[in-house]
Length: 125
Image 1 (cartoon, rainbow, N blue to C red):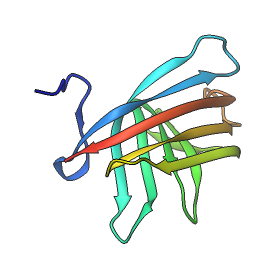
Image 2 (cartoon, rainbow, N blue to C red):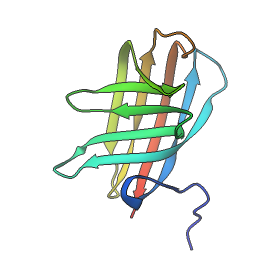
Image 3 (tube, one colour):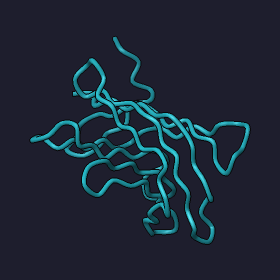
Image 4 (tube, rainbow, N blue to C red):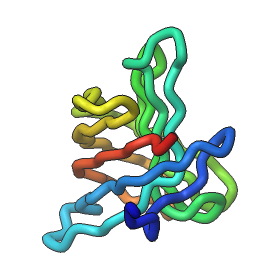
C-alpha cells in the first residue's frame, strides 16, 4: 500500500501530493510547502493551477497559460507577483504529474520580496 501521509484532498475529491521547495528573499535554507491543490484544464492538460502551503492561511499558487502568474495568499488576500522571471510548468511522464521552477518578485507589505524554487505535484486519482 502506498504511503498517503502527504496526500491532501484537492478540488472535487482528487488527492494531491507533492511540494514546493523554495528560497524566500534570497535565504540559504530552503522552505518546503506541501501541495494541496492541482487544477488541470480538461480540454488542455498543459494548463495548470497548483497551490502549495497551508490552505486558507498562507500559500503560493502557480498558474500558467494566458494569465500566467505566481500569487501569495496571506491575510485573506491573493497578492500577484510584481514580476515573474521564470514560471515553468512541465508535464511528467505519468498522467497528472507536473513539475517545474519559479522565480518571482513581489512588492507588497508583509509579503516576501522574492521566491525562487522548484516544485512537483501529482493528482492521485
